[in-house]
Image 1 (cartoon, rainbow, N blue to C red):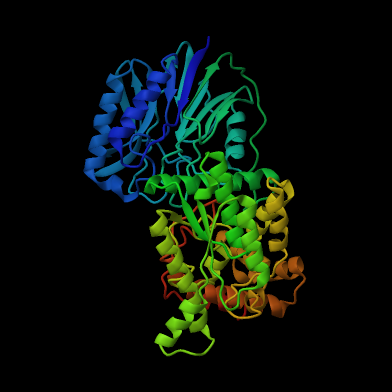
Image 2: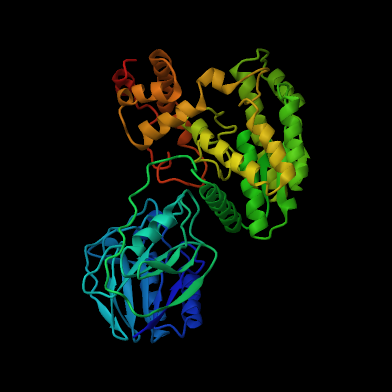
Length: 544
């Protein structure tokens, strides 16, 4: 008693039902020796179609595609699509057998494709039999008394540690198959995992990730035994905790970068390289991605834009990184252009106008060079800066895609420290060690240090985790912050006031933020605050 199964994640494109259908049929042909073929949820349309699910043209095309797929096979095929019923659009699963199909609308389960117009149902999909094995389809990983094999067609994003957690959960039941959507889906925020997982008798039998289209496995004798319980969910974190997670973080960032490049039809990226932490981290992610996907690293264009306050240390580090990674460097000093602009508007003081003019000039240069070289402009701002509004509106707040957007400053330090230790590129690693030791500064004024103005980033990153992610009341974290960071109550409250005031005051900048990569289940991607929302209650809560 054994069956051959195929787990398929074709590289689909959201909304491209016709070409998706051909790719699905091609997978079925490649898996012609399989008894059972499993695709992800919403595979026919893609899981990242957002509000477009509400348009009848999409759901009608998906149903026609299902007819086409069913007519092309005599296999048992499990596949997801949106369907319309009673004026609503449901996230549905089709079970195809012998050219016929039945459609069900199960619960949401593990599926997370971002904001959309879908409804989730409550259908229980009937068990079916293949070669003497009873198969049950569930919306999430769970035990299934009376069934031999559990199938979980799903769609979940690549957060750090997610794959390990899913494998752990699947290994806690006798036999499970998990298939998540992946390559080709939108990378606006969440990057779908593309995981294909087969567990049998408490062990991982087969696994493939984002870059592989099909894996096959044989499901044989299944033991009816008590297995180890799945691991409990991890503590909420915004920082990679191990070398494995750091490597995974760069891999997910790379998927986002290459995915967006593919979408806009380019094989080049461009970024401003300042010699600081954030731009160095984006450069490392781009270099690793280009190496993995065999793209010429000369197509990574790094632009250095020295201003009056730029230090020799950061400029030397930026130039040295360009040489160490063997990427393309362009140097465009901004002094003259900024001076001309300020004279044209009759401004002489070295104040916020002077600072913002430099940031906007740099962004203009990058956007224009992006057009000139047909390159994707990568942003470098991190989650800590985004949360605190520490950017120039219409300046470094803008980009075409930001791989750093869910990484706190603390996390970026951890990633760069990891890279400097593994010494994948020894010359670059040595430079990064000096970048890690350089005080954080936008270098818009001479001697400027960000943490002298805002307070330590590690403290603000702690506030992001406790207040934004865990939604704790500010008063409830004061004593812990005092203990963790060795600060006085007055100092903690001072930093809290800065954090809370800036979190709400600068929401308008986040409203116009670029797409990016979400590496953790909790960040500001889904935090919607009206630009004029008051922080009054939060400030009063902690005695401010």
